[in-house]
Length: 41
Image 1 (cartoon, rainbow, N blue to C red):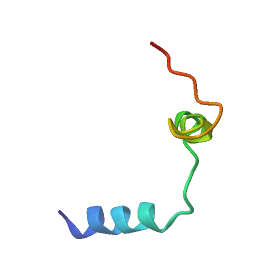
Image 2 (image 1 turned 30 degrees about the horizontal axis):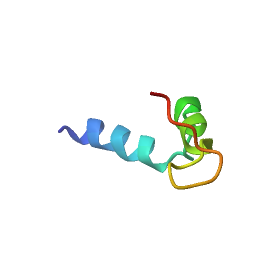
Image 3 (image 1 turned 60 degrees about the horizontal axis):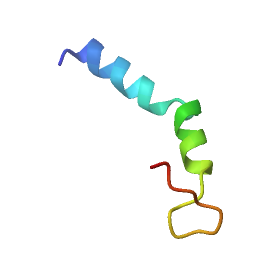
Image 4 (image 1 turned 180 degrees about the vertical axis):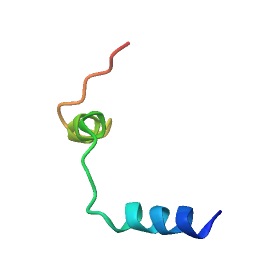
């Protein structure tokens, strides 16, 4: 990796995290052992 490329890489990692809508939706679902879980099969 070039020095310039490494600088860009470090810059991207230094940014605040961004939410991924699909992951937020998935994590809001009840877990299989929690009340309210419904199997999709």
